[in-house]
Length: 257
Image (cartoon, rainbow, N blue to C red; front, top):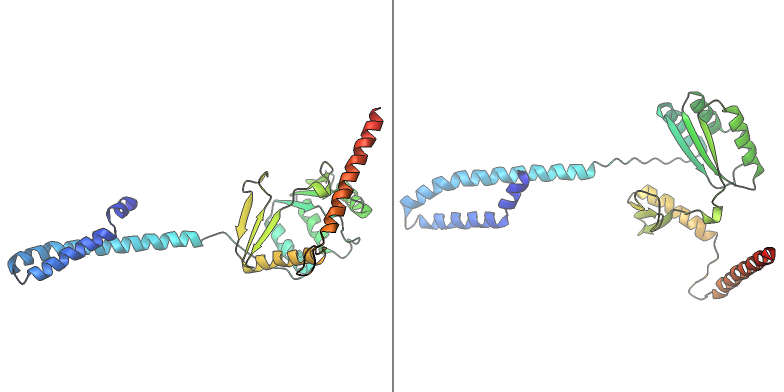
């Protein structure tokens, strides 16, 4: 109904009513009696216009409220202990947790880390906990997984060893930071995500990813500056990869013979 009224009621409608009102106003000088009759018709028309304006204003405010009512929460944790405190409370209401530990460069100490106590209480309460970890050279990771599997063998604790995909082949989430005010996260054109890319405008979240970008940049080889261009590094890498491929092909060919 409101949409139909919007189609009928437009700026041209308001302009037309205003022109009629001006004509009636000036016609009082020539035809006062007829103008008086027209004014009686115009009054209800103006009341309708005012009511429609109020209706459309309320509709616009409602739409604005719906746009602003977005489920969005943000929290930052300065230390691992702060995050542990958050998890201790959050896990009380949670029923399932999924954890991804792709990087195997984990601290070799589990003692005095409240996280494991919190996780244990969560699992022992009958909740579901799933962990994906990568094939690694860090022997401690395997020992921890073994300890956990034995400790929680009768609980809903599940561990997945990522072996079908090597670390360097894992499809990572691309990060694009725009004007230090927006971050776009995505996995490219071919993904299994429902939404391949998302955009977030939040000062703290953008700062988090901007710091992550700077961390990676500071640990990278700068291939181009205002003064230098290090194409030779790329050429060396290309030759190395081509050589490895050729050696691999030769090895397969010899083994086939």
